[in-house]
Image 1 (tube, rainbow, N blue to C red):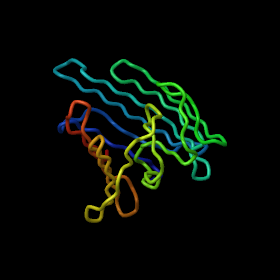
Image 2: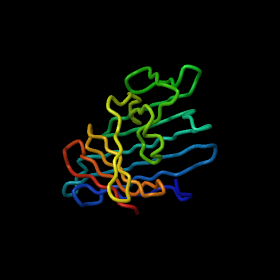
Image 3: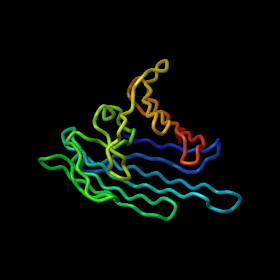
Length: 175
């Protein structure tokens, strides 16, 4: 990840609806904040705020804490590494994951080959993303949500597209 981290503007059907940022913090922590708001006329019809922290030690996820607010509903996920892997509590109860697991958070393409879990629920992803190439860019695709993340030749995250819950086209632009 670049020293300044990542900062994206999030566009839905071509209109800016929020931001997605990723930053390194002290103690091996990587913090991600996604803040989105969709308005129709002057009314908010969708609000999403996800703030999560990944703590990495020696290439392994040592801890994970997430707070997700989506349309007024809040959920928390907390995981700690132990001898049997990652364990903790999520919105659906107890979560147990392999020691090699990583959240699907896109900022580190080297993590996408691991067992992945949803960063909001802690649930393992049934279908892993797949990698291919688009010219000089590496493309990771997760068909389950029509997600595509793009990386340059140095492994830097440079773009992202997906389908929203309502089927709308969502695109990330550096910003």
